[in-house]
Image (tube, rainbow, N blue to C red; front, top):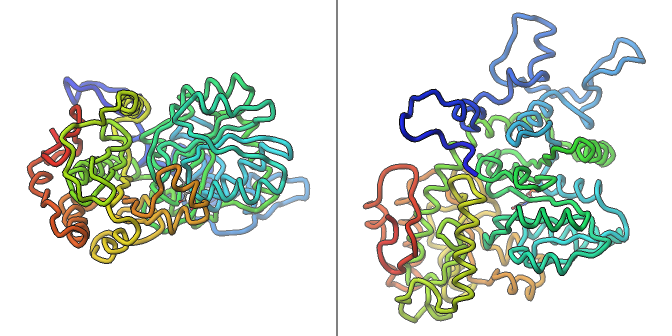
Length: 476
Ligand code: PLP
């Protein structure tokens, strides 16, 4: 899945792949490629050709005659700035213009309303953003739509959940907040064989690091509020598809329900999009280093990060964190070890060279320990958010997943000691120093592993080299 990696031997050899990569495309998005961007201004004065897509705040657009069908008539239906963003988001996935919404959940709501009616059935990842669970369980259920939440990392579990009435399989990968992975290609195959559609929530990786449509998904949903905007200034959501009929249905729902993104939100998001590849790759490289560092901390019981070669790294400490670090690199349970290896292979195949900037970890001592740690942090901001340029931390059990019944939370590993870290653009050393202060408050013995991090290369990519040796230097 390496769409963006330029050739290795001669870095300056003619390279069409580099010319068409997202890293090249993104900085120029919003103008030139987009017939809408600037067209109004250019029509008024051919001398005006703004470099950046203009912000058109007008709610409505004038007509000369009643029979006129202007490109944009009323901004609840379409708007030039929103169209510029939609064109850009579609181009990222080699698809027609996306449909943009006022938030990720507005995008999901429109997706469900456009595809489902009473009596239909949805199979959804059980590890999924809490708002998605709430939407399906508490709202769509009232319209007669039934949902089953299954472990979508297990293709057989999906197969078993499919019914004749299943219209949609909705997966989130990596999943929020435990970052488990679903094999999009395999799920697309069984979903289509059952006559249903597959939608993938790609919020955590974005089209830069994962391209669900290329793997067989029918629709990609993204909360652009997160990494795409990247600066915590614009709520937004998008749906991308290569099926224009599906896109038309989504636009119709949006027109009926009024969930379109605002022009200003679209303009801010477009600006964020221009630096997305650079940000998400840099933040992912740092996240991988921080995840490795976390595996060496005595007060940390589990680390969840797909780039560790396995989605979950059990640090081998007992439930109270008092046990010694495990000397073995994996559990002795061969079946589990196989599953972990499979996860590592899936991450390499499904992600484009990096595994995202979100790392979750569980501290020994449960909710009380998590609260203690949070109180010590000075750099990581305690918020309900991921994907910004600054490092953020969330307590999923009481925040993003508070509406998920405790037993369901527990079943997917969202225990009270779990914390979700969204790694920003700060150096890894600063982030680990901050976390070390928090972890010291728990055990008083947390190892200072900045030395390990500092000893690593200064480059932007840290390769995974085989197994994780816990409690020691872990990065090649
Ligand atoms: N999908 C995922 C994976 C999320 O994390 C979120 C929000 O946190 C959403 C969807 C919903 O997005 P929004 O907050 O923009 O409505």
